[in-house]
Amino acid sequence: EVQLVESGGGLVQAGGSLRLPCAASGFTFDDYHIGWFRQAPGKGREGVSCISSSDGVTYYAHSVKGRFTISSDNAKNTVYLQMNSLKPEDTAVYYCAADRRPTGWSAANAYDYWGQGTQVTVSS
Image (cartoon, rainbow, N blue to C red; front, top):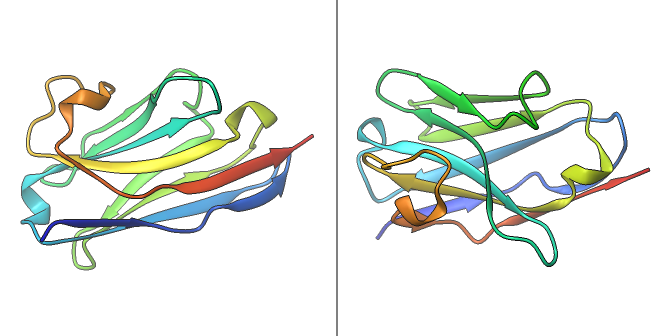
């Protein structure tokens, strides 16, 4: 059974940092792309970042580039999203997702598997 489990969310002040792990199981981790998405109240699901577990290629949304870093520990089947210099507009539920070859890294419908999400709230 495929499982993606996010953790690490919480409440943080603007300018602070959080690290979100996404622990994966039930599939061959090295063959998949792992993406991070977020969804704020009343908005659609937005692609934040993605990493190819096979070669480490990374992708970032313009809104987070330079502040967020995605990394992968293949030995632990875990992808991390390090979020620095957080802003109130980063407040959302953050989800990780997995797909072998997403047709577009930031398109939510390109991913087959999803976690349950973790809430990140940034206060001003």
